[in-house]
Image (cartoon, rainbow, N blue to C red; front, side, top):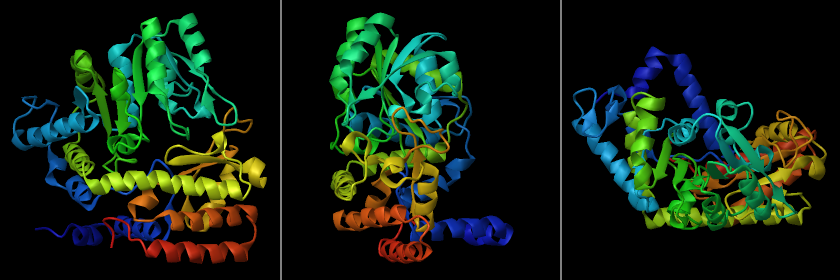
Length: 419
């Protein structure tokens, strides 16, 4: 068996040093970006396996190249595990990531110029939900609904009025920075009233839905449900499309050959592994703890007078309004937290008056810390450190002390697959 790490260190010491540096950064700090987590060591093994070498254009039993005996095995495992886990009629595990996953649904089911009703980006939506800078935003007509009030409730009266007035071909729900639970039944009711297709992008929530701690839009009869596999699901970076049987042929054709060529079979193998792991009691415990950890973070922030978008959280993430809480913008807050070893991301808030690269908020979440085994007491400490750092962004002594505290906590909880 080849020692791959030794081969890399000899052949390309510069890249090897960067890998070691990233391992050290992850081990000595905490990842609080809500779209990030740590995958399993066995998934890392699959990603570095000989499946990397194989082209597999097509689908199991219908490939364009020979030598597919084992690629067919792992893809069938992934498909059947996805269907069972999410109670879906059909699953496609080939999308290379989240953006092409969503594009495959739009392009497979709609015509250019068709209207899609989706969530406004600054209110929690995603670039692939029709932001003007995206190609999909130029190809389709996206109309956006917003949230209302301090708790960020979705105004379903507005959604219904927009749907009745515009007769969209698709009603889309899902988000990248919305801290509240979604009422899938209400969206389905409105879509049915105007004869629209329904799509839920649950990329952030996939693992939490799989574990049964958050609602599943499949159970509400959605036509399409998409999710990335690497966030709360803890698999490799990839995309997954679930749909009803009547749309299976169109979705498969949209993915291949419509949008992309051969799937990355090492990634498909990793998806199969992650989906199997998601059926375990340990995974369900992890998902439930993700939610408890997020609630503890939000409680501490509120106790310390921090302004939270929607006033709290029902899921794994939250958005801090750092302009109104600390008088600094999101880029500066992200930099300060990086300095003490906490990775977060700057984030727009609803109808943000500031530009996207200097927004008013910071987004953070709990999947990564929870996957390392951290619990509610640890989250209380982390929330306190965040407030202390952002309240004194130029206090070098305080930031240095906080960096030591973060590192000390991080090293108590090894990163899965590193060590």
